[in-house]
Every structure is written in C-alpha cells, then in structure tokens.
Length: 83
Image (tube, helix red, strand yellow):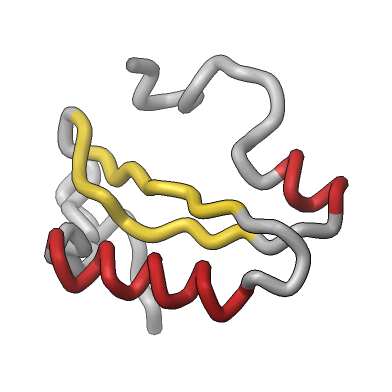
C-alpha cells in the first residue's frame, strides 16, 4: 500500500455509475493498515431509496465508521487546523 500516492489504479468505483447516470453510495467499512476504506453500493435508475436503505443497514450492522482524527505531523504541529 502506498500511503503517499494512494492506490495505483485507473478510474474509481464511481466512474461507471456516473457515466451511466445511475446512483452510487459509499459507506465506511473499516480500516486497512490504519487507513479508511469504503463499500460502494450501485443501483439501477431510480433505486436511490433502496441504496440508502442498504447503506444505512450496513452502517448500523457493522458500526465501522470512525470519527476522523488529526494526528500531529513530524514537527509536532497539527496536520490540520480547522481554525
């Protein structure tokens, strides 16, 4: 896993439904080597309600979502300051 440049693939899970005009929902599914990963739900036309229902059910069953953290950088200052 490349923690600096990310994944080494072309496209993304959202490309196909975006081109086709179909709905797409991604929900948190856990961590891999400390980095967040998601699960994508894609549906046919007008299936938004079903996708939201499936995504919500998955989130409730797994409790995989973790609140974001902002660890210190190498020099000790925050990596992100929302102020």
